[in-house]
Structure formats: C-alpha cells, structure tokens
Length: 386
Length: 153
Ligand SMILES: Cc1cc2nc3c(=O)[nH]c(=O)nc-3n(C[C@H](O)[C@H](O)[C@H](O)COP(=O)(O)O)c2cc1C
Ligand code: SF4
Ligand code: FES
Image (cartoon, rainbow over all chains, first blue to last red; front, top):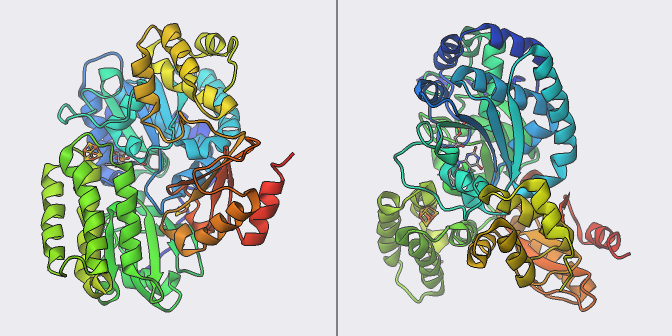
C-alpha cells in the first residue's frame, strides 16, 4: 500500500458560514443527507470507528416519532483533548452538525454530554447556543439542544453508560443489543456521535463527499484531529490527513529519541520504534480517537503501563467480574513481577487474563484493557520485568 | 456541614422533579457547597420522590459528586501519564508543603481540599490541575504557589 505522507488539513477549524450549510442541508431530503455521509466513508471519530452514515441510516429507519441526537463530549480517554478545542473554537459547527443529523433522522431534540472537567467552558457555549437557537428559529426549523454534564467518570463516555447518566443513574453500561439506534436515550432511537464526527459530517455536507474522499485512504477516509502530547517539541492539537505511518508522524512530532508511541490512549495500542515504519495510523493499522503520546528513551514503559492499569482499575464501573477483578489483578500482577515476587513467566498468565477480559467483559472498557497491556508487555518485556 | 435552606426546593423548581433531574440537581449543590451531606441527599430524595439510597447510590458513582466533606476550594491534580511524566509529583509536594495537608485531606480552616484525579484533557500543557471548575496548566513549582495564593482570600 502506498503511504500518503503527512499533510496538514484545515477542515474542522475552518471558518464557514454555518447558516448557509444548515440551509443547504435543510433543502436536501433525509435520504440525500445520509447518502452523502455514507459516500464520504466517514467513520466515528470517538474511537470505535463505526460508519457514521450507517448509524444515521439505521436511526432514520426507526418509526418512533421521538428520537434523539446525542453529542458525546465526555472526552475522557487519557491523551485526548481535541473535543474541548473544537467546542471552544467552533461550537456553532457542532450545533449545526447536530441539527443536520436531526434533520436526517427526524429528531427534534439533541443533548450534548460534556465532561465535568470542561464545565468552565459552559458560559461561552451557552452564548453560542442561544445564538444558534435563534438562527434555527429564523430558518424555520424545529431543533433544540441541551447540555448535560458529566461528573468525573470515564466510563460515561461509553454510549449506553452516557444514556444512563443523562437519565439520572449510575453510569453503568447496558447490555447490547438493543443498540442505541433502536433503543438509546430514554429508550428511544438515538444517534450518538462524537463532537468531531458531527463537525466532519457537517463539513461533508458543505463540501460534498467527492471532495472529502480525496483525503485519506480506502479504509480511513478524510482527516482527523490529533491530540499530541508526551515527549514532543510540538504538543498540541493538529488536524492531519489519515494514512500516515507512525514513522512519518514521529519524524514530524518526535524529539529525535522516540522509542514508543501510544496510539489511541490508555485503551489503545503501544507501537515500539521497530514497528514505526510499517504501522499505519488509521483503521487499517492502529485506530485512534486522536490520542497520540510519545515516549522517549528516558521513560520507563513499566511506569506507563502501571499508570494505565491504575487508571482502568479506578475507572472500571465494577459491574462485571472479568473487568472489575481483571484490572486489579493485572495491576497487582505486574507489581509482583517487578518486585520479583512472581516469575517473569507470570506475565504469560496475565496476557491470558487480558485475552479473557477481551471476550468476557460487558463493554469496551474491559474489552480494551488488553490492547495497551499486551502491546506494552510484548514489546517491552524487559522493562516490565527488570 | 452546611445548611441548605430552600436550595433543594429551588433546584427542583429549576431542573424538574423527574429522575433525569437528579444529576443536574446534585451537580448544582456540589457547585455551591463542594460536597453532598446526608441531609441534602435525603432532601433531594424527598423532593424527587425516590429513596435516599437511590440518591446516594447515584452520587457515590461519580467522583465529582463527593459525599465526604470538602473544603471551599477543591484542588484536583492530574495524575495520568503525561502529567505524571512532566512533574506532577513536584506539584503535589509543593501544594502539600504550602497547605500543610496530604492528598485526600482538607485544611483545618476548610479552605482547601487536595485530591488527585485522572486525565483532565490538558496533556499538551502538562502538568495540569483543576481548582473547582478552573483548569491551570503548564504549572511549575513557582506558578502553582501563585495560583493557590489567588484562592486564599
Ligand atoms: C470506556 C469507553 C469510553 C468512551 N469514551 C468516549 C468519549 O469520551 N467520547 C466519545 O466520543 N466516544 C467515547 N466512547 C465511544 C462511544 O461509546 C461511542 O462509540 C461514540 O461516542 C460514538 O460516536 P462516533 O461513532 O462518532 O465515534 C467510549 C467508549 C468506551 C467503551
Ligand atoms: S467491562 Fe468494566 S466498565 Fe464495562 S461494564 Fe464491565 S465492569 Fe463496567
Ligand atoms: S495526563 Fe494530565 S491532563 Fe491528560
């Protein structure tokens, strides 16, 4: 496969005439909007990567007159901070994306679930929201948005836990199926999308899908906003075309001494230096919600892994045993190996446990703990042991 | 301990008395008083006509809905990996020395509580902390002292 290199893009933060885009969308039929999003190949930007057009199509197909558009602004994945920047800089585009989604699916009500850590943004966001509601009324369309706040629980970024939280309960994930598209918020058909996904969809309507598919690769269309941190001279938020290798990324953002890049946050994968050149950042390689953490040779990968496992042990909702007990056992396990209280071969047992968690856990949290665990233990075994 | 007066009633008027009103009500109480007392949770339960156990069970799930006494200003220091790599321990020890409390504790005058928290979304400007709702980033041992002094009056 040909790699496309590293191209900076300005789609998400570009200034556009929001009113014009909304008007354009409102002149299209529901099918036309969904068709354009489908043709763009857009996949969810929140991490899981489900095709956005399909999600919209399924929700649109539901007959219930009451449906919801939910914007996921919980952004709890360690190393992710782009949704805050998007809301801070271009909130009207987020609102417009929700209205367009509402039109496409026949929903009149939207909720934005904003993490409690971003509460300081609210006053400004309400000012923009007020203007937006006025504009929508002028255009003559019925769609309104409300904010709901999180209160410091990573698991509430998981879609069904997020619904539970809005409904006023503990943020414990639900069983699936039913999927949100049939039974989501208040048990009504719901399309839940990440902040960036909604803005991207809105820009696809603005530019047309043909323009959008010029960017990216077959499996990873378009561009993506990356949150870059760790050992880098350029920490920050960058919008880049998809399809680059980790090597190309490191050439641009590394400090010259990068030994590993954690792609996708604590629930993502660790890519070691020897795999930089042939690992593509995207759905054909390592998928990411945008979190890119660079580690140079001064860092202990044991400490990195320990920090992640500590995070998961704290943030597991505790509802199912494989995840609740598994997270704690993995954490205790690497501590024992480090202290020499368990043999290094014990790590193999722990890898089996991580595999079990992947199949036996109820939600994406427990299912993805093994990603970082395995990719760090397998690639940096010595550092974990000694 | 704090007296709530009409607070719970007023918040129920504002947010409604449905189950989904629970989080916004609890969040507003915490915004004002920084933690939830047993009394206030019972008052909320009565107002929404649900059991106090339901209110407690929900509140206790959420890190920011504290059910233990907290000071007027809650300092949360990010302990996730990037902040940890960029000097979070120095920030904590500076605050501990300054306020004469350890992580998890509240000053005797109830002005400050010091806690750790998970990634607050400012990793590119690590180390980062939250004081109540406000983030402070790119901190050094010097700047964090100034930041906290700003809350001392
Ligand atoms: C533990 C966990 C945390 C999650 N946190 C977030 C989050 O903070 N933001 C987000 O957009 N998606 C998050 N997701 C993914 C959501 O469940 C859901 O897939 C996403 O919001 C769908 O939007 P998208 O298709 O636009 O990506 C999380 C998933 C899991 C399992
Ligand atoms: S996998 Fe973990 S976070 Fe998910 S439901 Fe089970 S215990 Fe809760
Ligand atoms: S690791 Fe501290 S803000 Fe993200």
